[in-house]
Image 1 (tube, rainbow, N blue to C red):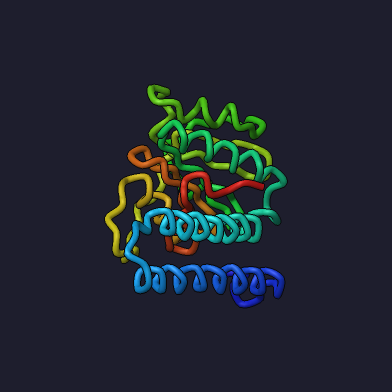
Image 2 (image 1 turned 90 degrees about the vertical axis):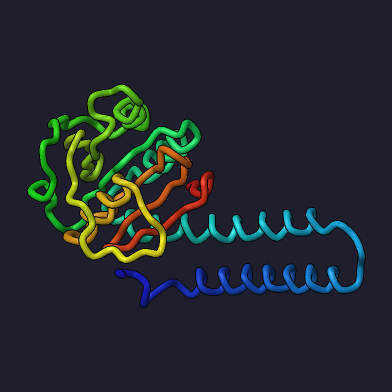
Length: 207
């Protein structure tokens, strides 16, 4: 995947530091189990919070790495994804990068509207005729909505994925687009890139 071979030293250092801290916490927890006969649920909660913090840092970094050269409105996308996640409104959003993707999607309704979180939320509001399809974004413009994306062909992930996730993966298999997807069932936010799916914890992105 682009960007992975040349990750900034600052990011690598921060991740190593956080992971070392997490490892220390886990070792302390294991020692507590040996030495004390007490409930350790609070200790598990601390470890869980630290792990989510690390996930948050990584998710934010990678989204910035992959999208900042192609849109100046990454914050709008993350705010929208967060709001949709909290409401459990499913969403499928493709952000064009270098490759032309308009010929790879079908049956969309042209919009050519200025990108905004409120418009994206309205498109994916349950009952809206366009909410089941995918949105295509180029720079600061919502090009179209209600698109049908090609379904995944080569995906071999361990988890079973739904229609939206397969569509996100499918488009990323045949283009360099980054495709964000929000699960209607769980509210979980993920993104697909280069045929792979990368989950983000709910509440795990902010810029």
